[in-house]
Length: 151
Image (cartoon, rainbow, N blue to C red; front, side, top):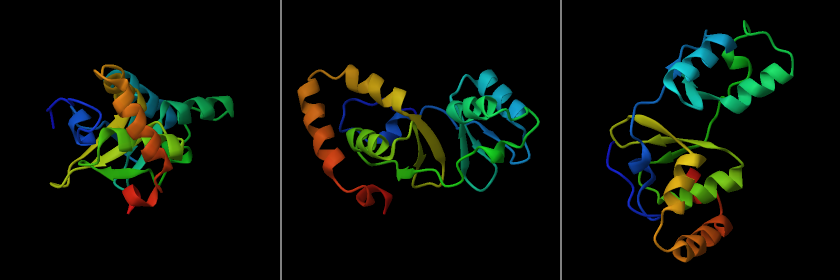
């Protein structure tokens, strides 16, 4: 899981460079925020049921007046978007834009998981030698029905 992405058509799984950070489903908002800060990540997986909590979720919780003692499952997305590790990076970007999400859970054939952020993808696309190539691919992917990647 440490091979670097070469271009916009590389498999999204190549962006995963470390194990995802997680907390138990009994964790509080405060504990989850602390775990994110210590690991320097913008999201974490919650419990064994596959939920995901993001910085955006925590910000919205604070804005809504929730206590740091509230359970993280109060704000976590219980059915996050998951994709296989082999889909092209540009198609993953299109999926994220269409679904209006900032994080994807990547599923590897060996059963391991990883998390990729839109920021990770954009960093690769911006370093692309020829942005016209990936912009065309991204436009086409955005027009492709989401069901293709969500199976």
